[in-house]
Length: 247
Figure (cartoon, rainbow, N blue to C red):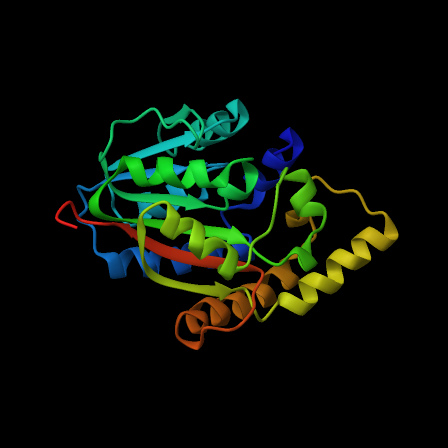
């Protein structure tokens, strides 16, 4: 991402509706997976630390962070969110089968070879352990945030799931989320492009009252998406497991 984008997100991630709602969703997924508090957990692509904040609040003690940006490492350090190493999702500096849980949330869309990245994520997982993966979806929604974040692509589930299977993952669950705001996001991004508005991050488009409303809407969204399984959404979530050694 651009340095200005990191700065914009670092300033708001603790309270912004998107980050708050996503942490709520991830907390529910992690609770369902049930890793012990002493589990070895890797957060790939920490950015400014939103997942590290969540994992600390959930009481995990052995959390490792990695990001390819020195700016991300600095922001996480300044917030006291733990040690984050410089590194690349396509060349993770960890031994095979080390981690009980890996988070790779909005990461693989940044790399040229996403299949290679998925294979690296598979490699560092212990057999039988899980990956929590999210990606931005639907090329129709391409906008300013994709550009400042240096995305290579947006996905659909029917594109993403075969790549996970090719990387030898077993699929546990998958669905789109952020479906209630799909049309407002589409309209907003078209308007930003039409008006030629320049921002460091879409997170800057906010006020306290708008943030309150969107927090409530997104809270409903992430609570209902796992069982409603909408056919669209601005993001997709996948929980995939490295097959046990016996398989």
